[in-house]
Image 1: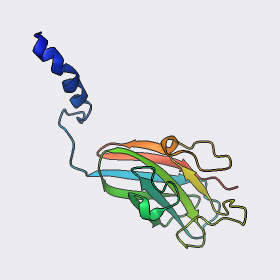
Image 2: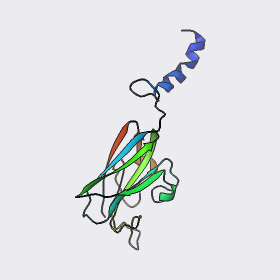
Image 3: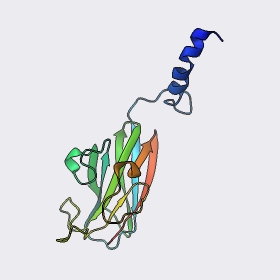
Length: 152
């Protein structure tokens, strides 16, 4: 191996990380992200999720999320599907919007009145987990994430 080739070996190896199992780079942006939400306490309202590609607005500003939206459900679980997501890292939050007002309702102390949860199901004490704690790597063709709702 020549010295010249060795100089570029790390770049070649790094490039391999962006390939699909069949060896072709996947920059199509046609990944599907399915967010499975469970632990829903009643059949009122809808479930909703927001997907963030940076910490700006995390986790409460839908306007600053990469994608967000509601989905109907039955029983104590449901699925929210986002199509055409580029591969990459995203933080995800889900809520049970019982009154369909498109936000997580809180009491006068700021305590959530509706169910909420995050990708990776981190432990939640008095505030939302940091952005990095809810990061999920999305790959093509589909990535599935399960979020267990918390009711305080």
